[in-house]
Structure formats: structure tokens, C-alpha cells
Length: 316
Image (tube, rainbow, N blue to C red; front, top):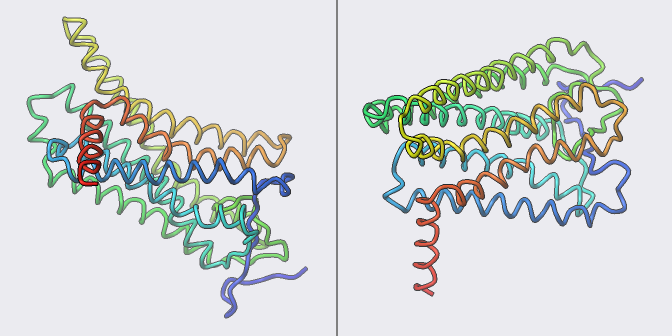
């Protein structure tokens, strides 16, 4: 059996996969994917533009929202070229270094989104449970520290994962099962012992999303307890309304993530295209829906978008 080592001078070339069993229809399947990418990129760019230009949105909640949009935008861009390349041009080849780089950014931005959602939960917790100290706790400097901390954590957990992938040797079968490079998918092609890689992958997962999810849940338990102590029903509703957008963003991030994990672990009898479609849905749904949710549910964002659109129209 032919074995390839990562340390060879000539980089290995892997083959990406579109939708298994539906190769002839990929050009048509690419149309909804293209639309979703356009919506994700334009929607998140619009949120970033609105928060940057509108001074009334220069508050902690909207700074965290801009972090979420920047993460969603980056997550969309890091898979856009390979996914549409496979669907449109049958450009399936990707060398090992490019594959590892894409894997680093793909998982890194996924973990970063989880960290940003935790930061947003903390923002809502302080705003509702300790409103008098809100501005003194969430200063601009502290918000910047939170953002940098999330970034450093992701780099710290992903660097060992990447370095140990470089040490693997691969067999003659170099066909990946997605249109992008996914850590579990990549290490399964290895001919050498990949237990350390699996352990590092699980550690990266549990030290990021595995830590963030319970903390978000705990923050909302405390928020609900605080809201229920408010005497007036109008006050309770107002407090809950400030959390709806964030709760929805958390749901559309974690529910596909958990569903994808369950399908990979227990759905071995499912057709291959089910795994592929769910993997692409997991990557695209949060970047597509988050700007829509915050535009619809958050009135200051709505007003700022309308204001900017009117100004652009008047300039034309």
C-alpha cells in the first residue's frame, strides 16, 4: 500500500467532494449555496457597516454583535472558494498545506463564534442583573480584552491540532468527504496512529464549545431568575425582549452543531449526502440567519440600516 508522509518536499494533494451521488446535479445545487453565501457575506458586511457608522450603536451590546458578524463573515469566506469551486468548476484538488490552513481557520472561527456568544450572554447578564454597574463593568477596554482573549484561546487550542496533523502519514486514498477540510475527515485518512490527534480534537472542542455552552445556559438561568423577580409584567417582557435575538443566535449555532455530531456518530446508515448537506448547513445557517435576526428583532439596528440606505439613496 502506497504511503505518503507530510514531511516530503512535494506537498500531498487531496480531493474534495461535493454532494455524493448527486454529481450531475451539482451545478443546480450550487445555486442555493451561492445565494446563501451572498446573503451571509452581504448581511454581515451590512451589520459591520451600520455599527461602525452609527454613533448611537457604539455600545457594548453592538460591539459584541460586530464581533459576531466579523466571525460569521470570516467563517463564510474560508469555505466559499473551495465549496463553489467544487460545485462550479470541479476544482477538487487541494494540497495539504492549504487544507491544514483552511481547517485551522474553519475550526478556529467556529470556536470563536462560540466564545463571542458567551461574551454576549455575559453582556445580557450584566445588563439585566446588574444594570447600574453595566457601563463601569463593560468598558471599551474590557470589551477589547474579551475579544483578544477569545482570539488567543482559539489560537492556543488549534495550534497543537495543526502541528500534529503535519506529523501524520497518509495512504493512497486521499478523498475527503466534504467540499472543505474538516479535522475528523482529514485524520481518518491517515495510515499512522491518530489517537493523539483525536484526543487533541476533542480537547479543543470541549475546552471551547464544551465550556461555553454550559456557561451560556447558567447565565440565562440567572437572567430568568432575575427577570422573574421584577414586579411588573411589562418590565419582565421588556427584559426578555432584549435577550430574544441572542437566544435565537445561540440556538441556530448549537442545535446544528449537536445535530451534526449525532449524525456523524450514530447516523452511519444514513446516505452520504445527508452528512454532507448537514455539514454545509451547519456552516451556513448561523452566518445567514444572524444578520436577519438582529435586523428584524433589534429596533436600533433596523433604524440605523434604514437611515444608511436613505442616505445612500439621497447621494445617488
